[in-house]
Length: 373
Image (cartoon, rainbow, N blue to C red; front, side, top):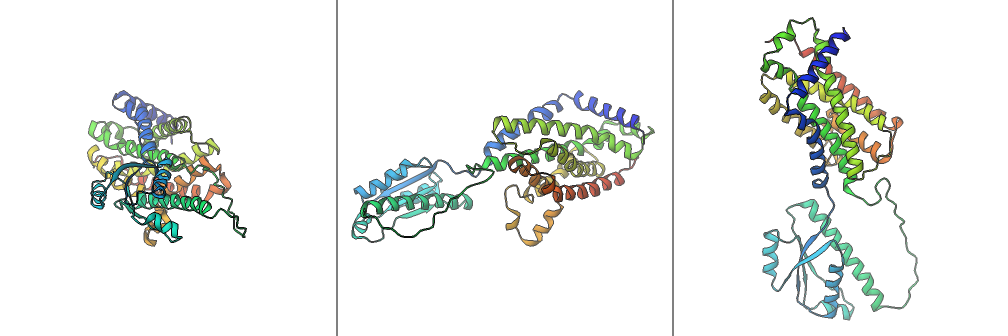
């Protein structure tokens, strides 16, 4: 193996890559734009719940409940209605997220000491969001009940109780961006490295320069190495850029060792670059390589635990996730970002990435031949 030949091929790849003006925005601007867009869009935080309300009681007790809803910044009463059909229509048109209906006997039941019922209607077309909104509504009603009981029964009652002192580690405010932004960083590194690498060999075929590479003294392994080293360097530069942006823009804490994260990224790139090279060797055109990419990108994303917990998936699908390198890298990047975990904890994920990367990269190298057919 000649490092001189590899060095010249790497230099040629950098010149060819940056000579095309269309590639420059993709390498620098695109990752930042995607990080900003995904960082704000991908969130499970529930804010500004639009509420439609029907008050059939119109008493001080019902108005107090309405004031309690209005005082909560999460809820916004956008529609005061008179008929239940109007509530159904607004839910159908998705103009409100929740509907509250206070019955005519609301205050009379409270004054008699009975349980007063109110109806809460939720838009269940998005089940996860509906469950969170209903939980917020239940919490709001529990607080209202506690305040009401204290006023109706001012006497002090002493009894034993359990006082739970809850502390949330690693994400005290339960901000979903702390969870999703590191995952977006990992996904962007996989996406860009996979896309650019899958074009490496195919671009030479379409440009007509593959014949020139075939007649050179480059060995197949040297050619593959020279093709992948530029993308490893570019991916690491992009990783540093998006991590800095995530820390400075989204204020995501970086608790762990940055050098360990960069080393883990190199191991992760073995798998993504190997898959990209395999796609490049089996594709005849760049369009075909691009379409083949989506065959890998979507399953990697869905089976990584990025959005959907792996523990909730069927058992057969859970076994398939062990073949997904993004699954392991997400655990690594989130652990280093939020928990500050080190090599003594992350070595199983790193070992799995090394095994997957070694198998995939070796298969891509063996699949490549220095010929046009």
